[in-house]
Length: 198
Length: 430
Ligand code: HEM
Ligand code: FES
Image (cartoon, rainbow over all chains, first blue to last red; front, side, top):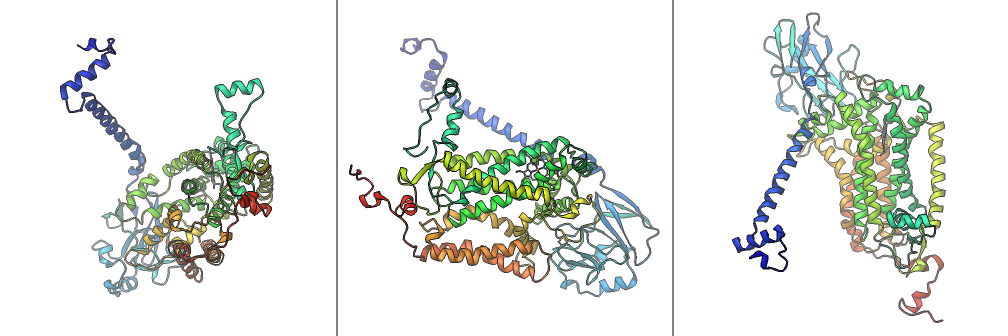
């Protein structure tokens, strides 16, 4: 039958199309299905390629492997602070004096921008050891106040010189543009004087 | 497309005729920037800066490819490899100084180019698409320059990367994971440096592609001009070559004199001395300032110091991005049918006594420490900036009575245009 058409010089394409139209009758050809299926498969496949392309930019295994740091704080006396490195970022550890603890406790929690008590920011039994990231929560500068003689800001804790954020003795934001308190990382005491961070 | 009277390309030499048949590249050049492209006869030097920007891009690519031959994108050695370029590589110091100062001059040229667009309302129909692509180019340029500045891995490089990627952390929910993803770590390090190098190499070529689209879109209506009156007849135009190749060439000479004065006599005047100190992740410099060309945006970022529904930090970031994204809407915010500021008395007042002083204050305050009076000044200027585009500009185009326009470019230049008297369709009486 197909051979009877003038154009039907044995081309399979022409014949196939005619047969499809006869089969469905409503204008939908088998070829439409094949087109849609092929394009969607290619589309989904193409979208899948984005997964490795995006994920390769996330921190690699070796960067994640540096994710814990061990610290010995046996020589840290009250009133002193040290700077360490955790995940390639500065970490502050401070041994608070009773007076500094009292200062932090005297502030009504509800008056704070990021309400938290000193107890919530330290471990039980170690209320004098304040461990925070040394990364200003505004845009990430390193605040001053660890080394002796550095500007500790108006609240006797840390002061960020970049845009003027003042933190108190519990590392809580009190004045300036930073939105939240200095971050307390996950850590634990493995002995009375050993910290494992991360 | 071009005007009907555009000169046709007619190669005479057999080689050129052969080439025209096989690969009509010379024909393309002839019609794009040669005698086959008619341009308004009255362009002033403000119209020089597009060509200068194109030149800057080529200069950055050439010097950049040379630097990349000697630079090592690894946090351990990046800083030293830049010193190696400066001291050991033949002419390395010159390549680097041209590249670093070239970036500054690129921005200077782009800012004048944008200023031209704002004053003469070049963004208006039929040239909206040219303007939109231009804003995209500007955003790409900012990203490229930011990542380039990280590469020498000095103190400003490092802390600039920290602060600028920190902007993303202001976004609610996804902000912090996004920042970690961008950096490939918890702070700038090797991963960040490497990808910034890769992208810093790539983006200029993306910019080059966008520039081609920019010029393609330009060649459909052709250039605007200082009167803002569209080209009507052949007497309004001259061929690009030799008229504007000569004019732009002269401008380029002046530009090179200026650039080379900096390269040879003031090579570090536009940079920050702290960037000659190697990156130190444990100590922030006393004061972080970006390169001068980012100052207005940095001032807007820091102008938000109070929480109002959203935290101040997020407001600052939103406003900074909005201050540029706003430009995308300019063709529809300014509804006046008159283009040139020369014929818009009210627009002109707000432009010279409002927008320009506000921009000047933002430039100045962005480079100053985050203290009073700079913070208050940037707050006022930021407020004016947004009011100008979102409120004043639409209002001005509503109430303004423009001054009379010349009939044609020819009349504006020669004082008379015979067609203006006879009517456009009247045949000359000869
Ligand atoms: C859109 C054009 C470009 C701009 C605005 C730009 C901007 C910059 C800036 C501001 C620096 C820092 C300069 C310094 O303080 O030392 C830089 C460095 C660098 N750029 Fe570019 N650049 C561009 C194109 C390119 C291209 C196309 C390449 C390579 C193919 C490149 C390769 C480099 C290299 C290797 C460095 C590090 C060496 C150095 O610090 O001098 N740049 N770029
Ligand atoms: S980064 Fe600390 S105040 Fe901005």
